[in-house]
Image (cartoon, rainbow, N blue to C red; front, side, top):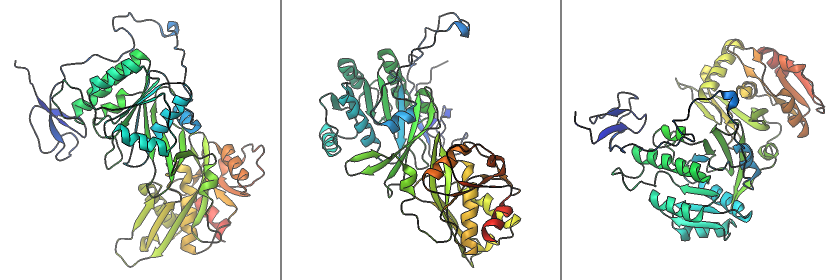
Length: 452
């Protein structure tokens, strides 16, 4: 049987076929099947010899996991305490969000600690990077720059300098010389990530890869790219807002529930020590449709303002515009309000916004959304000293959430004196939080208290 020298692979899902197709039969995407060339096999990146005999798990010696602090407490918290030597971190985000700026600042702070850092850029020249480094005060003699896209040359630079941190910007512009595929193709991205992983493990060098993202926010290239690396981080935020959120979705050496919050300034990214206070700094008083919710991002309680605007419409299909929370979740909550409270929201346009460019993914924000929508619909302002949190079910019940004590303590520290929360969380011990707690079991019971 003759060996196939080329094949076709879907850039969206990785489906392989011996012939070209206009539409991928696996994921249904059009125009994503491109020609690829086989890599001829590659050396694996395992850390053990595959011929070693199996041993009982109780006899396996755990590794001495040492971490290198980056000088950014927010970055260290996101990674679980610092950078692990020999690990590979993939960071992505929208163009211009600040990925290169953040990693350049991290490299400079490590260099100021006496550690070597190598920043390799395939998109900018060394002169352009120096201009940015001068602007954000990231100058250090131990921070090395290189403008290179050939992987073999990058590895050669790493062998010669032996840095503690290697930054590759970006993985889509780097290519392996022995492959015929263009940079950014599936085979190139996969081979580049695999070889860099092997190089990092063998030399104990921490590696950060910057990855491009598609219009839907996922990493460009094969999904296997996220499986190869040790840590996957998304740098989120709106370019119109100054705040950025570092969110980890995969971490082999720590938790995936931590975030880091930064503020983009003219001199680079600055850590936000008390994000709740900043998010509420411009909160209006005495207006309808505004409520403060205590959300949890990892182990950190975060107070954010949710605004809602309900306006009558004569259109046959009312508008639902949502920013910062899931649109489908808001649609469910609006249906609950219409069914359980009799609010005719099907004849109204509804707009929901989380102030500050923050995105809330946990269901504890449900109670804040229904409260803000009801306040705007009835045109009754809420108590400015009130906060709330809780998950709302389809029958209108308010379900318990985790970390109620931390949420209450954070609200009390910021001067709030009243909190609506699920009945199941009402009896929790609240040491040091002198705040009036009101437990509610259903949405209609809470609305009766607020708007009676």
